[in-house]
Amino acid sequence: MGRSGEPPDLATNPYTSIQDTRRSARDYHIQDLQGNIGRRLSLKEAQLLRPHKSFSPALVEKALSAFHGLEPWMPIFDEMTAN
Image (tube, rainbow, N blue to C red; front, side):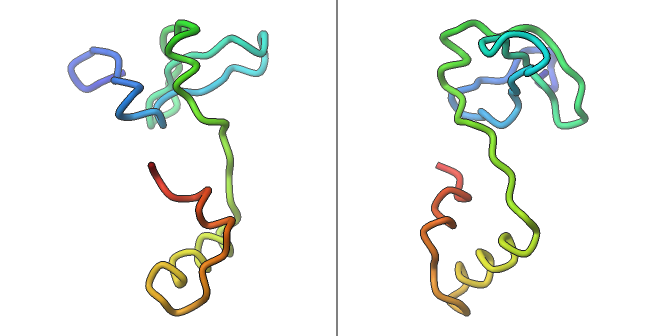
């Protein structure tokens, strides 16, 4: 939830939402940065989300080095950037 108690704008902050895989594949809920799960998302809101991915710390370190020009840029790093 937002600081004021309002749900976040998913168009500008999609990282506050998750898919609840314990239920159906279309059951999405708001999750804040502390891990608290809130209201269910509408299908329209859920369609704004990108698939969740996680990357190893070693890959994040290589991406950071590449970002600063210390290593070559690899295509996988494109998936790690915020759009």
